Image (cartoon, rainbow, N blue to C red; front, side, top):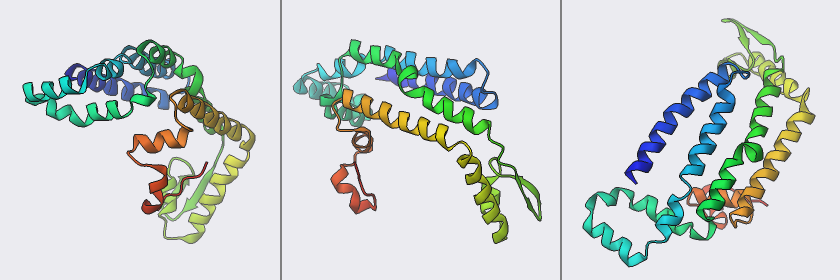
Length: 213
C-alpha cells in the first residue's frame, strides 16, 4: 500500500506537468505522453485489486491487528473489497488499461482541438477588451449586464459553429464510458460514477440530484 501511494504521488506530479505542457501546445509530444503515462501506470498497477481480494477476511483482520499502520488504508481496502463484483482479473484490467487512450481518451483530445480552432472573439468592458474564453470568469462577474450578455452569446455562438463535431465527440464519449462501465458489470456509466462517489442512484434525490438513464 505504501508503494502504491508512492507511485500515485509520482504519477500525479508527472501527469500534471505533462498536462500543463499539452495545454500550452496541443501539438507538443507531451499530449501523447500524458495519455501513455496514465495508461502505463494503470496497466502496471492493475494487479493490486485482485491481490487484495485474494486475502481472506479473517487474514486481513489479523493483518490490521498485527500492523497498526494499516489502519490508514482501511477505507481504501474496504472500497476495493466492496467493488469486488466490478473488478476484472489483473491481466484483463491491464489489457483494458493499455487500450484506454484509444477507447476513451481521444474524444477529449478532439474536443480540445475543436475549441482551440474556434474564434470566440472579445467583449469590450470598462476595464478593456476581455477574451470570451480565457477571461470568461471576469466577463461573468462584470457589473454591466450588457457585458455579461454579450459574453454569454459570443461563447455559445462559437460552440454553435462547431455543433456537429462537438456533438460527435459527446456521443462517442457516452458510448465509450457506457462500454467501459458494462465491461465492469455496471448498468451504465452514471451508475459507475455514482458508486465511485459512494452514492446509490436511488438515494441521490435526497441530495438534489436526479438520476436518469
